[in-house]
Length: 115
Image 1 (cartoon, rainbow, N blue to C red):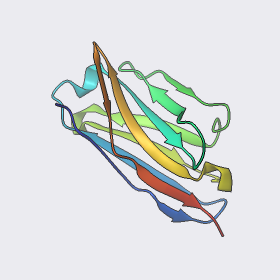
Image 2 (cartoon, rainbow, N blue to C red):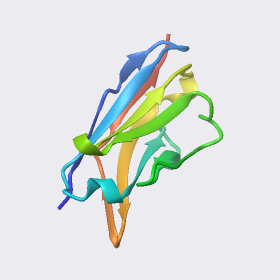
Image 3 (cartoon, one colour):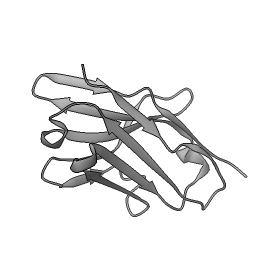
């Protein structure tokens, strides 16, 4: 069973930055697409960004130009650099690893953007 552990959330002022990290426990981390999702209060969970095993990326329109997803396969870690944060970015952010018949989620880390 793969475990995904997110960290890096917290309270930040509008316009600020945070970097989220997600560490996976599986030996085959490098072959999976990794993704960040978020869920705001009262809303459905949505895809924020994803990065394929070859490094190609895609982003939700709402975060393009502000967020950057990256990965370090040697550390079994995927990152989400979040800049120019807005109050509407407030949510619990989840890491997901899926593919090859498997689908794993972390427990999430809370990001609050408020003055």
